[in-house]
Image (cartoon, rainbow, N blue to C red; front, top):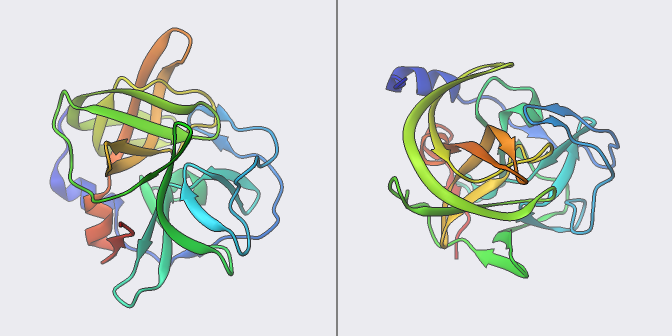
Length: 216
């Protein structure tokens, strides 16, 4: 089903950023299931560099950093899954932990990848997602502007990929080479037998909130 542009904008209506709670310790229910376990090495916290794909806690929910962004005045913001904040939006914008440092980085195989831009890849292009549960997983873009109904509601304007997912992968940043693509919002299957992952492209959110992605 193809989404109407007005419906996408309605889901992405700007709201006040939510502050990240320091030191919360619990696991949320997410579209992929319950994300359990403590924050691992590299987790976002006070005075830490913020890297896409790292876990963090927000009001007791275990979430994943999508991307770092900046306001028109240069203030640091985080792009995360709306499910992390309890928002109906596919992507939400939150304040970073106090004292943390923005970076143009995403966790990759054996290290980090520098984000160079936000150019959207076409259908058939190779894409990869990074998260604390399944690490670095890759696939191809299968379709764009897809509408999907999840248990929590309906999301519009999504991109469907063949990247596999597991419980706890909600909110993973998706990359095509060094170009940021979007944030994981749901999927089906698993990484043993294969599956499908959907992500929301970044440009509508960046435009709605007047943000610029942190790139190098």
